[in-house]
Every structure is written in structure tokens, then in C-alpha cells.
Length: 101
Image (cartoon, rainbow, N blue to C red):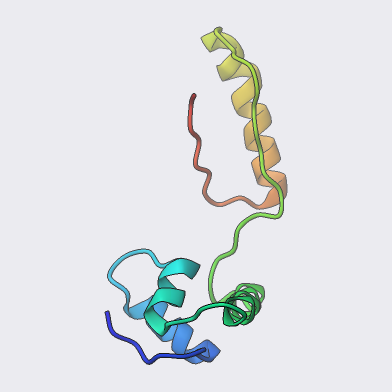
């Protein structure tokens, strides 16, 4: 996808995200507009403003992590999963990416 070079304004970023065929992150925006160095800080600020305005989504302020292992399916079903759900609900999490290791 081709886009103008240089630091874009909010409208240009929104249009770029909307017109993109797949998901778009900060890296893709920076690459498309040729943003490097100090301009990346300004791009982050613009993206934060768009997220604060509800134009784009944002990442949660908190990270959830589980250490150790639970071998009991019953404990996962009855304790861990409901506790995770409650924590996510309190934070307003809409999507969670869970990776078992």
C-alpha cells in the first residue's frame, strides 16, 4: 500500500488504517510513511490521541501473566478461568491472547 512520506496527521493515519487490507500496527504505519528517529515519538503521541478519542483501539494498561502449572482441569475450569475472566472484565478487556507454554 502506498502512502505519502513524512509524519502524517490524524486523518491520514485513520485513512491508512481503514484502507489497509489487514491489521495495521505502529510499525506498518511508520514504514508506510517513512517515519524514523524522533518522528516515531510523535507518531506514538498521535496514536495515543486517536486511542484516547476512541478512533482506534488501545492496549490495556496492565499485563496479566500466570506462572507455574495447573494440571487439574477442574481447578482451571472452576478457579483459574473464572478468576481470569473477572480480572479481564474489571479492566474492560475485549480481546485476550492466551499462550500456553
